[in-house]
Image 1: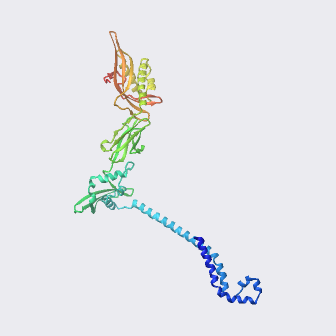
Image 2: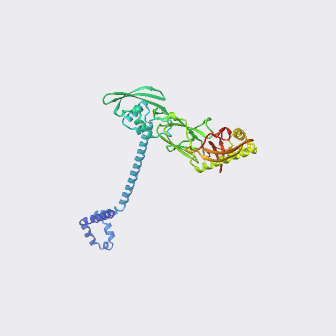
Image 3: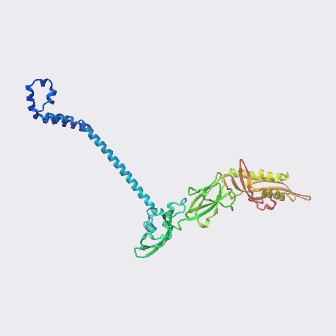
Length: 438
């Protein structure tokens, strides 16, 4: 197109002098009288002052030179101006829109106005819009879908979509809280009321929904466990100190959570368990364990129980000091007085009355009873064991084999274990009577 336009302009420039040729005729008669101008045609064309027409012709020829440059410059300047205007408009629109959004988050300074908007949104099913106006003490485990379910199922909002607001009455208003009675009316002129409570926090009014979620929901699990609720990790800041718990346990307090079914996962390095739980006031504070799923680890632990029991028995016969027994078989956290109770008192009662030749024949898993993880390196083991021994008296001898169910808590110690808690205190005592047959 540019070449075509340039060609058209060239043609127009040529046509102009052709059209003016008849006017130049008087000039041609003058040069015949003077032959010198014929030798040098240039001065003949430029010199004549008698006829202004030829002077105009060179002006027309010279004009096209500078003219395009001026047009290009003016066009270029115009484009720059337009771009700057567009940018300015865009920036202005951005700030205008964002200002609107920012003011939207702070837009409702009047609690009565918010109460009216909140109820209108319920009537018009604008639940998404309402969620931002609900007071939530901690939203770590509160999501919008929870509110959508609540708004559509809450009994006090039943049938609200067929009503409209008639009037609003102020019931209470202070700097921090407000309550309004919203008068509703149906198409058939039936009237009902709805009470809306609001709270002012950080200069923002929010609607208080008492039944939307519960507060300070608690549960107990193990210190080393990583806990998630519906995939969201429970932060350590929710752990509440509780001296009534075991040293390997901890109590979590969740500031706010809805009473809808949650998938809670408890996980350590050596075990994992999950439960579907609906948080309620009635189940707050319950204890949740972690099942030991590592069967090889459980097999090694049962073998250690056999080794430790027999080792302590031989050490007792050899009169090894209790402090050495503690270092050899028990975790450092176990009180030495407890070690003495199991070692000195328990084995003494077991071996007394002419009993001897004690031998643990086997330690087996307990059917249908889980083993548990109490941390990254602590396990609770349920097991059965078979013990044989001999009874010798001057006039009587007999051999016995008895079985019993028991339990113990062990701490992983490298490739071996240490006794962490003797949960069955009769394990090393004659008083167990071996009454649990298997």
